[in-house]
Structures are given as C-alpha cells and as structure tokens.
Length: 263
Image 1 (tube, rainbow, N blue to C red):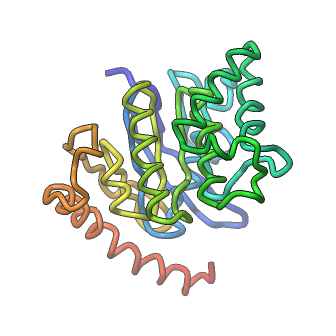
Image 2 (cartoon, one colour; image 1 turned 90 degrees about the vertical axis):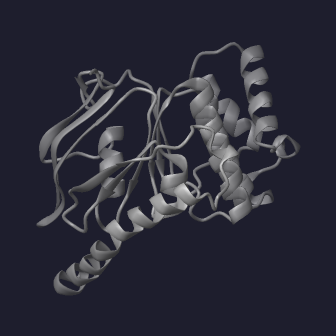
C-alpha cells in the first residue's frame, strides 16, 4: 500500500541530552484523519513540527510522497497552531486575503474565496474588524479560515482548539471534519483531549511518556460524519475510555520523569 506520509525510526534529542522521541515509525494514507495524543512532554508537538519540516531530528527520516520533508519544499502543508497567529494590524478579511494572494490567484477569485470562507465560519460580520476588536474564539476562526481557504494537501493541527470555549470548539471541530470529508485532505491533529482525539479521527496514535514512542494505534470505527453521532454515543464513550486508560499510566510516569530530571 502506498502512503502519503511515512515516518521511519525517528529520533529527536534536545540539548543537552533530552531524548524527546525514540524510534517513532508510522504510515499515514492520503485522506486520513489522524489524532496524536499522550501525556505532557511526550513529544506530540515535536513530532508534528518534524513532519511539517520546521523541526530537525537526529535519526530516522520523514517522507512525504517518497521525498524527504527537508528536501522537498514544494509540497503544500499548513499548520494551525494553539496560539492564535493572525496579523494584529490586519482586519479579518485582510488576514485571509493575504494568505490567498500568496497562491497567485486573481483578485476577483481571492475576494470570492475569502467571502465564502468568512460566511462559512460565521465571521463575515467581522470582516473589517481588527483582531483586538474580536474575541479569542473569533480570532482563532480567522486563523483556521486562513489555512483552510488555501486548501493545503496536509493540515497539521497543534491543539488548535484547546483554549476556546466549548461552543466555539465544537463548531470548529465540525467544520474541520466537513472540510476534510469534502476536500479529501490529510489531517494530523495533536491534542491533550481524549474525547476530541476520538471524536475527530479515523485512528488515534497514543504516545508514551518521554521519551515518546508509539504505545498503540487505535482504529476508530465510526462514520466519517461525526456530527451525526451523539457525543454520548456508547461506542464513542467506550473508545474514549480505552484511549484514556492507555494514557493514565503514562501520565504518572511523565510526572515521575519531571521530578527526577527537573524538566
């Protein structure tokens, strides 16, 4: 089987001697939605950044369509970060337009796409507002909108909804799922939230406490249209409990490691 992304025996060491990842190997098919979860400090974000090509590593390799991520700068990937990354001096519309202009689109097309996404994300009324004039939830919607409007092949999410209120978080979860289904993109989603990991993904990758290795990969056998599934669906809850049970022991281990080494 051909995979769009392959990670082979990945090893990451932070100065002076912090072994963050130790022998991570995984394969992701094109069009998959994958969640990565584990205790704090297990290397979830480090793995995501390495896949994005913005974090180096000391061993192994990461291949996207058979090419090393550091050697192929042409492939189209984008990161949605936990901290809101919009330009504070630009309005909501200007933030989205700025990203689209980098795709060398015509002005008419840029305007049409930005208007459609602002309406979809329910931020069209804030088009001419600066970030300081919006709530944090609205700001993050602008950030998500800016990424998705550009239609990257691979969307990398670093706990993008963790600081949001539940209503906004639930709304953005559903919108990213709709986008993934309709556009057949590949999504890798890092989160601390077990329920979120299970609700969104087709498979959940559980990492151990530092040094991070893959403890188990759990297939989530639920329909793609998760908005049609109740949040208290018995199968969803059962899967969430199972994933939580995998992580619980490693949370304790993670705390012990921090006490022992001081970080």
